Image 1 (cartoon, rainbow, N blue to C red):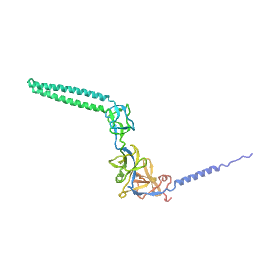
Image 2 (cartoon, one colour):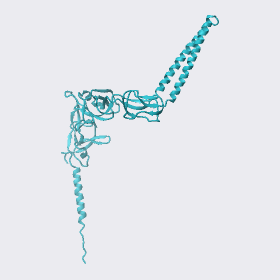
Image 3 (spheres, rainbow, N blue to C red):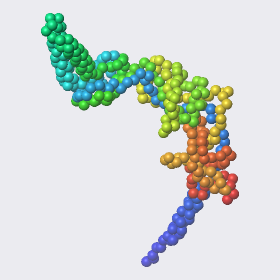
Image 4 (cartoon, rainbow, N blue to C red):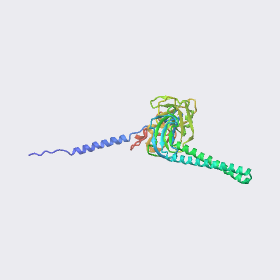
Length: 357
């Protein structure tokens, strides 16, 4: 009986050859030359865009002026309210007790004043009859003035207690819309702590944080525009630059008042575009394509071609404009060659295109 044999020794050899060819192909792809671009200059004042948010020109956080438990929350987010309308009511038992105490103090001061007035009158009559000296009359007049001052003080304290009693009702300061409620029924309200936030919907503005390095360009813009969420571009009716720079973010806040009738609500995102006059003499900045930038967390770097190899170099970048170029503030010089594709340049064995191998 014959025995069949299978020649399997060639299969591992073929598999090894296939893997070797694949490895060589990957290595060749990994070592493929990467095109480079020359670091050049672009006009810094070609215009730029920034993200902004919508704010109401008139907005307020209505706070409690007395401490106590919230016994009633009369509004909810989205409600339209009128000036003087009740927003929340705070437990008024403590302020009511203070008002009653002040009423009693006023009544006591009035009685003491009446007694001092009668005593002063009596002492004057006795003086005319020669039964008391002038010093007794003077003392009675002094007591009368003190009683009058005590009554004035008690009345002032009562007015203050009545005012505090009125603070138990938190009311709307103007016509508007409730944006958010910050407490609920049963919460403990404290003096100076917000109860409701509200805004007047008629007038809105776009708020944008402009980098300090571009503040001069923003001022030179002749026709800034705001892009609404629906894609429409509108021109602001007024623009205001705040006179202070944020010490941490190094930005300047700009406020651009939007035309009336704009259907927006506070907190929405929009886009702000600053242009520059064509005749303005603006400086130039170094720039590289966006594809040449490698970002890893907080790191921003580019691959610089040097002696036939790529060297990773950290750079400081500015705010990208509407094009594909990214301004370089520090880390590169004009004329240097950088990899056009930072991902390809980071592969093992990658070399600049045109370099000797």
